Image 1: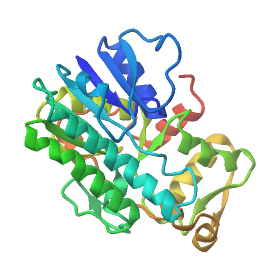
Image 2: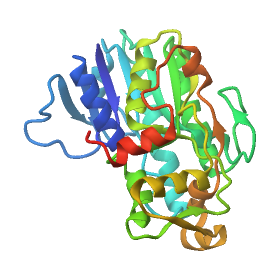
Image 3: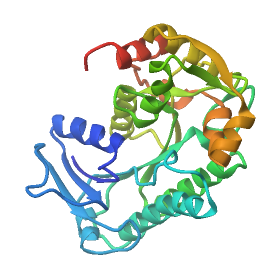
Image 4: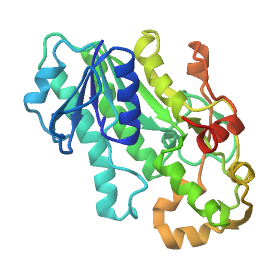
Length: 306
């Protein structure tokens, strides 16, 4: 397949690009960063510049492509959510997605599928109850971002494109940035959980994230929202204690929610809120998880060789 991948220079994008290359696909990575001389050392991978907002020569690359995967968006965990930062978080996602959909209008031979990133934050903070893909959206900032992001992608359906909106949980992986930040306190015997620790913590191993995107790419019956989370649910306190036991460091105290709000502001919602998202559509479509249970996922990310 010929696949256009927007946002391919990030952590997840790099992992997905490697996997697609290994499977023999041709991958065209749209990037806002600098392109190294000589391009990629991966077979079948090429890079091209775009600004994530407007059209340009890159739009011609959509013609004849089989699929688009859109991961574009500024990192949620890089910096306090000031009004200016919140604008960047929203616009970097919506503008990039809108630019891709507008470009689709200009090409005669369109890709058949757009797989668009989103997050389980779509549902907002839901203290109890399972949430599948039919559950309503929340009302906090992250939920608003996800709703707008997904709405921009949905516009491609009117062009006859199958759209999959992938709502991903917390990614567990040796080099995953958010996972590494969570691991740091444990290395200094300062492991903790956040708030009361009763919030649900939707998670998924990196290997299953990559496989989930490939599954959505290859499974023509899959469309609309898809929760990309592991089937085993866990609360924040249980997660932190299990993490501590695997690394041989105690999770011995909570970090009060009020302290996190003072330190991080609204961004603290990433740590002290949660939802019990379940992968109903993935399971019904026959997806097989490599790491369905949290202990094995954490052990692989922390102890096992890649």
